[in-house]
Amino acid sequence: MEYTKELHENFESLLSITSDKTKLNGIEAGVIKTFLSEITRLQSLTQWIPVSERLPENDVPVLGCFAGKPAVDTCVVFEGEWWQVGHKINVTHWMPLPLPPEGVK
Image (cartoon, rainbow, N blue to C red; front, top):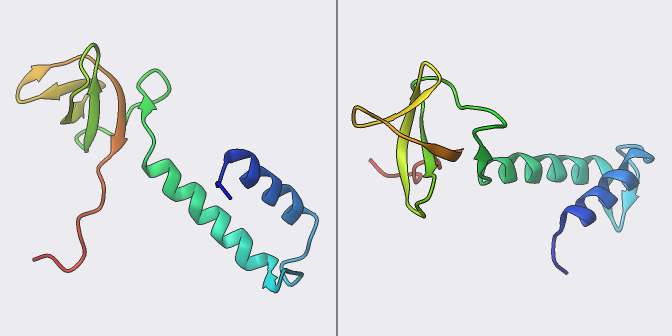
């Protein structure tokens, strides 16, 4: 079964009418609600965000997608403008940087 937005919404609808202790196929509804919340959080970390929708915080490195170029590079937003190595650039989308690997020194 493919995990889709529609499936996620169906789970949320079903869970909205059950108590956290209700068992669904042997799993407590509260546990499923926690999983759905975590799935939503993780998906938000891996989706491109249009700059027309919102900008990242100032001086926080992010991945940026440049207009007209398929390349992705690390950029910094400073005072509402995108900068890279001292140059203002035209970015259309961005996403947070991934977490570094665990256990690497």
